[in-house]
Length: 201
Length: 64
Image (tube, rainbow over all chains, first blue to last red; front, top):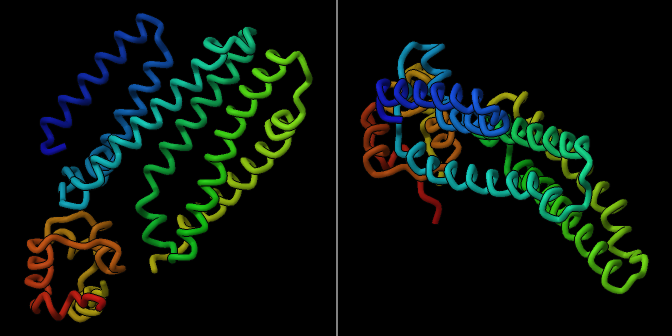
């Protein structure tokens, strides 16, 4: 954001919209809105608190802003699809499951926010090998999550269509995907925290 | 691309933060420049060289 005035305008508007949304009891939207506002303005917030002035908008930041918007959009699309899954596919209809999914969505948002806030620092402190490993682990996490969703869908579809107990996708969804997800998640977390805590190269 | 920003910074006893302030960029940008992970614009390269009282050729070394 270019000026302090623009930043203040966006902050106040966000607050007003958040208050309106709270009065409408649209809590998930409020959380999404505040997370979005923090994603956009976290550096400005931090700089205002620490130095009482706005940080410069340099050329690298300008280039990265378009990437951030793209990432934010992808996250929003995935989160929406994830939230809509129990309603559209109608796999499970119990409210507790919806709450669990909501909790997972919020946790994913928190992890995304955390990684977004600190990625610059981690990237600058990891060597090429570390960065490659981080990307590999993140890919494993993402692919296993995708494989889980696809396997659940295919297992249900095949079982429903042919009236058989389909074993392959069941095995992938119940054993392989969670295992790969855990490996990917723990691996990327270890490298991320290692990068966060190490000194600059 | 390799750079000698760190070396010149040490010569003039400048911190990354101070250099960033003088050039008008964020500290992270200086970190990325020092590690050769970011290709600066001609203007930024010129400003860095000017602040470090040298030429762009001296500071930024392009790999063949």
